[in-house]
Length: 352
Image (cartoon, rainbow, N blue to C red; front, side):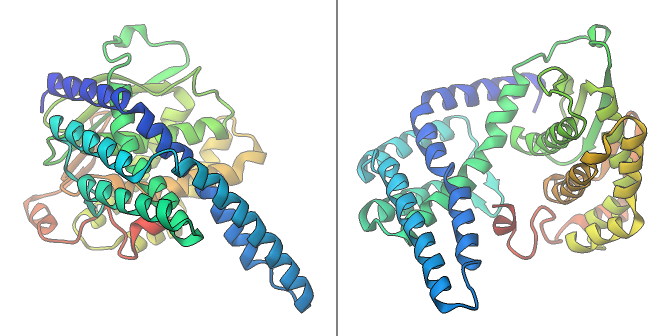
């Protein structure tokens, strides 16, 4: 896929989002209550007491809150009759088919997700009980999460792509990343780029740097691989580079199937990479009170790269330095091994 194809695809995604804005808004309003349900479930679990009467009272209060939340969410769900939602979804499917993005995402194609969405909405609309309502809310949250990479990539591809390196703002720095992989679509590209952007945004919060003042932006994109030049605040870019180089030798074992994701994360933890990165962050101005936050950000990024690095990656270059370079034997080891992006213990549940 050449740059022109990426841009054309991005424009089509943007038009799709604009065309189906009402549907996405509907799903987002429902999904927004997912965390509310999780919080109430935790309250229910913590309702037990040595005093039976207290336990009953606590549980009764939580049940009332759940019933109230059910009514609120159901009022949103009811804005689409099942047949009307089916019609709207069919239109969405047609739009997806036009831009050819019915490709496997996570454990199943988007088309299957859409069919599941229709079924769950119908059950919630008809039965009007907690189990059915929560199932629909939960699935909306997962579904929208999968769609985020399409929307995100379209937005970032269509903004500031032609900025020249000589025009970089003050206190910004470039990072040149090339990932050699047998990919040819916007979605695989966007997964890795989204990983970098999420890490960058997390670091922005830890350093109390406003993302809007120093956004991560694309300077250049090339075809044939994930090859991009990005720029952002110099402190944050330096830490991202340090993280990537620190992960290099472990990524080799992960890609060739020598270790699974859990061992990958444990090895990095034992090596003290996160602690080294925190020390580096402190040396460039991290406030002590944000140490726990930045530790969580780095640990999450280690989990994310194991999920989002393309399965077929054989070489990674950062600023023209080799981070990963698999030989022919190692490259062959990639073929036939388990998908690297998925946790053996149901990745969907852990990311929800």
